[in-house]
Image 1 (spheres, rainbow, N blue to C red):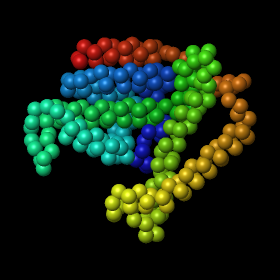
Image 2: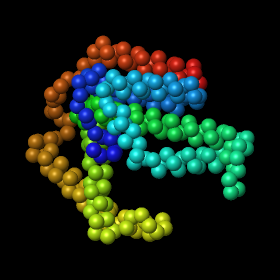
Image 3: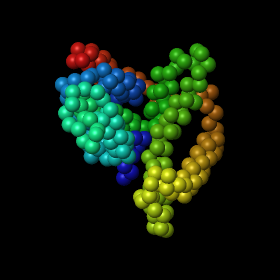
Image 4: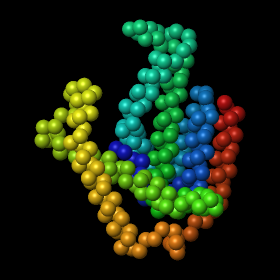
Length: 262
C-alpha cells in the first residue's frame, strides 16, 4: 500500500462512511479551527480522544493513518527544529551555542500535535469519502458563489481529481526512483545541490507520466460527453439524516469547548 494515504478511499460499512459528505467536510472544517484555537495540553488530549472516537466509528485501521505521516516526517522535523532553537524564553539547555528554551519546547510539541491532527483528519475524510461524493459535497457547499459567476462545479471537480491523483503520483514517483536506483542512480549521497541535480532523472519521467494520465482522463471524460455542470444530473442525491444533524451539532459544541479550554 502507498504511504501517502491522503486521496485514497477505503470502502467500508461504518457510521462515518454512511454520513453525508457535506457533514464530513463541515466536521473537518470545525475540527481544523479547533486545532488552532486550542493552546493547552488538556485541549489536545480532548481533540486526540475525539479523533480516536472518529477512527473507531470509521473502522479504519489506525496503522494506515500512522503510515500517512511518513511522507511529511521531514517537514515535521524541520518545524520542530526551527521552533526549538528560535523561540525566546527561559533557558533550559545550551548545545553548541544553540539555546533551547521552555517556550520553544512547548511550541514544538504543540506544532507536532497540530500537524499530526491535521494529517489524521484530512486522511480520514478521503479514506471514508469517495472522490465523487467530495465533488458533489463541495459543489453544494459552494453553490452560493455561483451568484458571482464563480465556477463552482469546475473547481470542485479539479479539487476532487487532484486529491484522487496524489497517491497515484506518489506511487509513480516511488516506482521511477526504484527503477533509477536499480540502474545505478544515487539519490542519497552528496550535498544539497548534488541531490537536487540527481532528482532531474526522476522529475522528467514523472511529469511525462502525469501529463499522459491527465490527457487520458480528459479523453475519457470527453468520450462520456462531459460538458461541466450544464445539464448534469446526480446519480445519488445528497440528503441530511438525523446522524448528520447530530454530528454538526457536536462539531458546534466542539468549537465552544475548544474556546473554553483555551
